[in-house]
Length: 106
Length: 119
Image (tube, rainbow over the protein chains, first blue to last red):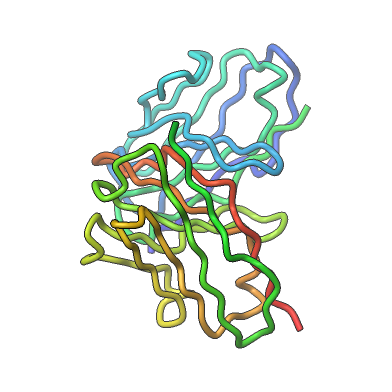
């Protein structure tokens, strides 16, 4: 199975900050990497697919990059609604494993 | 409007069985892979199983293989997860989600149903 490792596990930041979350795969997954945002008590929401493709309706302050084994999710200017937990997921091979999550806190 | 609605969760004793359902509306259900993802209390997301459009292909995470069975009824726009030999570590919120495109994104999710395995 492909292991996905996110860092950091938690992150404290302020409104207006730029933050970056890293996701590393245990083997090359090309760009089969998606990012999700989850708020407490809610289902996850897709933000970015194929490592860098922003989903319709997602603010442009979110961006993704990477290929192979190393990927990043960046938020250019944090807004209050961005404080949530973020997960990467590889869909290169089953099981389509998730990272352990990064909790973004104020 | 696309809706995925899970049901069937509840409290079950270790070793017991439960069948989850996911009713889909507002999307061409029979044309999409579907998946189950779970989340233990206070923990991260775990991919559980997926199934192709006609049910001929399916796969599972190792921890549930041989105990859980994913199935679908396209005539009823429904996805199922039969869970047998349940363990305490299966306690989680179970989400169904639609799989879309070549990158297999999960673009629509249900609200989840809670399964608690405890004596």
